[in-house]
Every structure is written in C-alpha cells, then in structure tokens.
Image 1 (tube, rainbow, N blue to C red):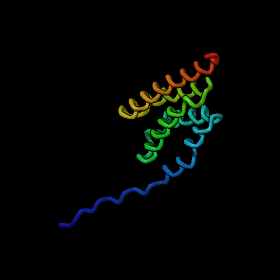
Image 2 (image 1 turned 180 degrees about the horizontal axis):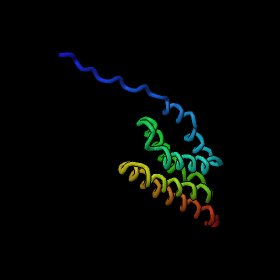
Image 3 (image 1 turned 30 degrees about the vertical axis):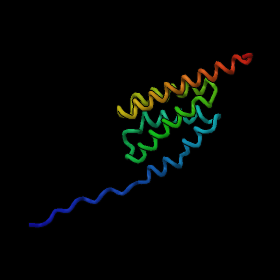
Image 4 (image 1 turned 90 degrees about the horizontal axis):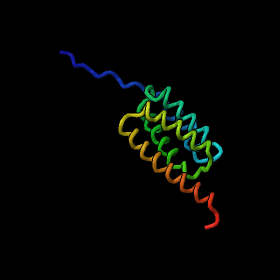
Amino acid sequence: MPVRRRAPRPQDTGVAKRYAEMGIAAALSRPWDYPTACRELAELLRHGYAGLPKPAQALAAADVLVAFRLLPDVQTEYALAAANGLLLAVETSLPKQKKSQAVSEFKCSVVLHKRRAKVQQEPGM
C-alpha cells in the first residue's frame, strides 16, 4: 500500500513582513500621526483581518494594544475620536479573548486620558 504524503504547506506570502513595513506601530508613537494610524488600523481590521494569515493577525492585534496604551500620551480630541473608531472595529473583528483584552486596555487608557486632561485644565493646584 502506498504511503500518503501530506500536502506541502503553502509558502508564506510575506504578508506579516509587508504589514510590519507599513509602519503602523511607528506611526502610533508619533502624536501627529496617531489619529491617522488608528483609522488605518481600524479599516484594516474591518475589511481585512479575517483574510490575514495568523502572524499578521498577531501583529495587528499587538498594534491595537499599542494604540490603546499610547492614547493617554496623545492629548487631543482627534486621538480620542480615532481610538473610539478603532474600538468599534475591534469589537466587530477580533476574536473574543483578544477583544476583551483590547476593551479593558481601552477603558484604562480613557480614564488616564481624562485624568491628564483634567490636570492640564486646572493649573492652579
């Protein structure tokens, strides 16, 4: 009886490498690029997350967490609006465990963001 061989694994198309080259994580760390990077990441999650290979999905989920962690450092309303849009995209596209992790990170970041904004408004203490 002939031995059945497994089908060869499909070659990695380099999607994870191309995703890393997009530079979303680097753009998130720059305050002036933060809202744009959040919007791009949200669009990627809405329209392409399910079709990405697992390594690229892991990079996208990590970038979501980075975006929410950097929110308190970016003190603009545009950043908060972009992070809210990213949260909506996260809730529709990420799996349950990653979604809950991102939502809890977002909640903590919003609290810190509001505290820092309040301190900046009250300079007389």
